[in-house]
Image (tube, rainbow, N blue to C red; front, top):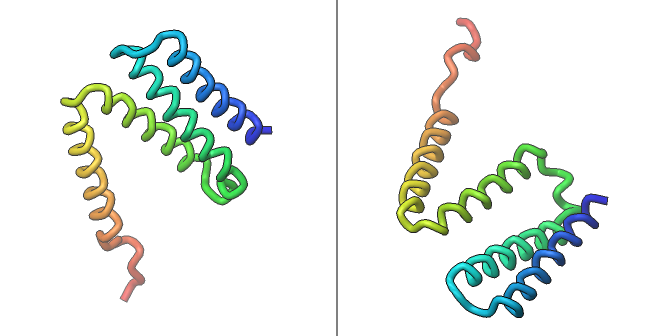
Length: 111
């Protein structure tokens, strides 16, 4: 059921991008809308293809993927925010890596 919904949404977004291109033509806002519709449709199409293999992924990871794609779309719209977003992402990745490498004092066996 959910795979069918993903496929239908992907097709709907790609057709909507084509309709906007056909009726609006070129232009700044129209090109942005066409690009967003097309990219989102292609990502949903890729998810539709990979759906049988997504059962092994936790739902939290899938939700995080959706949030990451939305944040990248917002950051791509404004060039100044992308530098800040990349910087925050690097800091979070470094902190997470340091947290994993830190030895846990409570889990050591008593001597």
